[in-house]
Amino acid sequence: MDAWQAVTLAVVALLAGALLPVLVQLALALRALRATAARADQALAALTGAAQRVERLAAGLQEGDRLDRFLDGVDGLSRATSHLLDGARIATAVGAAVGPAVGAAVRSWRESRPDGAPHGADGAAPPAERAAGAATAP
Image (cartoon, rainbow, N blue to C red; front, side, top):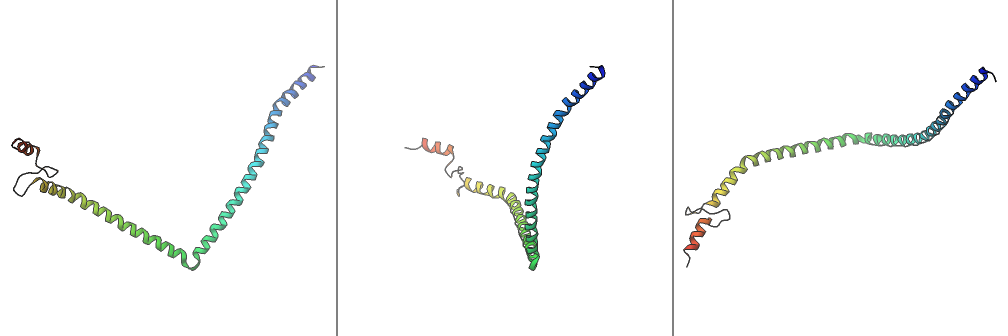
């Protein structure tokens, strides 16, 4: 065998060794591509069906001004919600302004008796008066 034949055989063997894994990977990629194409066809069919249903729904809403009535209802609901939120803001502001004053008035009313003697928080006499009253009891 001549040198050029040996070199040619080595080059062919090298190319075959390099191309064989490439061809196997190409075959696997084509198989995966076929499976993906089948799933894409199914997804496209489902998407087409959904688009047709949306078109039928839109056509139904456009008939007889249903869409306008629907949007008017949504607008009215939005306005009512806005008014409720405004009322809640006002009530919160009033509560924040009046609450401390009412609390102070209730505390002051509970702590004072008509004769001027102070009461405790539970309406009973303060601890000093109870101790003094217990010491003088028979």
